[in-house]
Image (cartoon, rainbow, N blue to C red):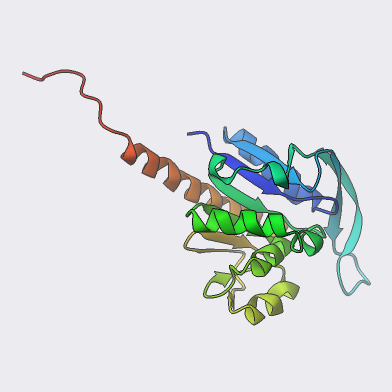
Length: 201
């Protein structure tokens, strides 16, 4: 079954997380759609660790085209939403339309996926409370202050929400992501009426 995935990012989004997600969904036969504040070529970044630094460094990454703006998003058209990391979430979490979209996915029982700093958007949307989440380690305090439980696992699923720590968590994260999408496929198959092909004698 072809699933339609809304990918949320913007300028400063993590380059590897964006391209990995986009290509991985295409490889699986799904339809990834990148949403951003504006419809144009986005400037992604690379976050990595180098000797002598106490925190990650940021370098220019690849460019990627966004397919639509947040105002053009129709939640009903998608099976899941993916909130990517990088520096983009620090300003996207202040966008009322982004928060509205994330809450709508959750309220409609759709899958909500988030990785690294993308969990900051989940927190601001009020989806941390009562849930077990993981994220980049320095987002831990935000999760806990918002009433969530922080896990040190590479990837965590709590009901309809799946979170991961960093792009280094891709193997664990996408195993969980595709397992969730497969559940959607099975549920859809069960909901379809049985076709009667003829009387058996």
